[in-house]
Length: 453
Image (cartoon, rainbow, N blue to C red; front, side, top):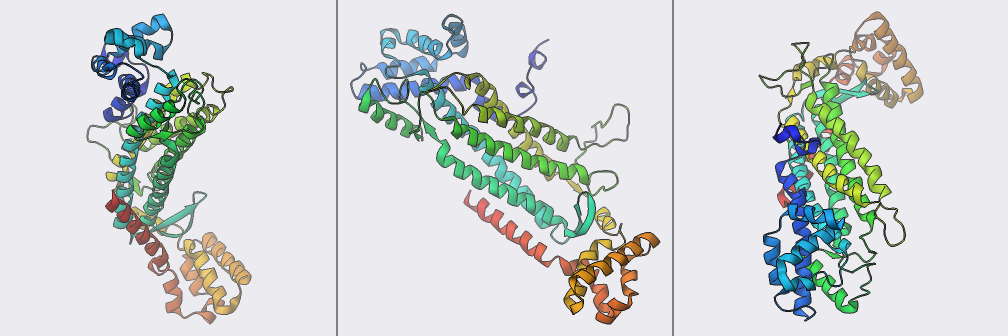
């Protein structure tokens, strides 16, 4: 076999975009670490700490760097960063002796990780904006479409179909704010040596650290030991897992609304698509199910990120292996969820006829709260109104008679309301003004955000 048939992990061939895979690739990671080393060499050269020409020689070495060379060297060193340094140093000739002065491996590894995470998060942010836009479009499209609201899976009250998408959009507006807030703490690096306090180069080392990190668009992690503090990364993965769960929430709603008995929406289904090898009629919500499935992994990865906060003294290696898995998995799986959610919602089929039909399934019982409160506000009292409406609702259910007719025939209601008033209470549009205004406010907030990006 060759190609995809030889791959083991689905993120290698099934999940995540090519754009993000390149950012998270091993080749890019090693080249980014080498670039950090280059910026340090430049800064040291300007201060006369290393011979002139060291940084130029290093840049040429980086240009010809192959990750396979590093892997081969690692077989001897059993240390990935030392392998990288050895390969670069050999390519630099005698100037290679001046490589890595005052540094430790985590200076390269951790700083490079943050640079790469920033690029990866940029892709996530771009797709979140697209998702928010799609949700806003759906909210606006169905802003005048009444539907059933369900609590505990049971018909509860009259609702607005566009409001469903506005609620999701609001959630992702909050995620956007969370990312922007997180970025204030996330974009840090360290070029501070073995235990993070410049024991070799002192204040000159600190000066170089600030200069190099500034060139990378980062600032020093003041709490760094040998590594960047892992609470910073734990916060990142908490945000990613939270976003993943919101995507799961959307997917779960779509899956439920696509149930045969509800049938208010349906995923796009290609003309050549197969739903089941056994049942030719099946049109399953597989995209939404896949989104939900991947969310389970992302929520599980959150535990790993929290475990990595706890390390011995100024560092140990218990976070190292897990982060090699955690970072690409979390970003690629979330990327896949976002791609699928955007496609799912952009091509969602909405069955307005079924939405209207489902409103009538309970013969008007979804207006019971509205009816009870209207009677209470007429001076009848809330507790008495509730019990009366409950009695009338049971009568409607047991006799199979429309709730509206039961209410219209009730002497107490006829005493407090005209027939026109009672009929009006069963008209959906009379009760959805706030829902519509809130939905419009969300749409305006989305437009404002998109206009700034």
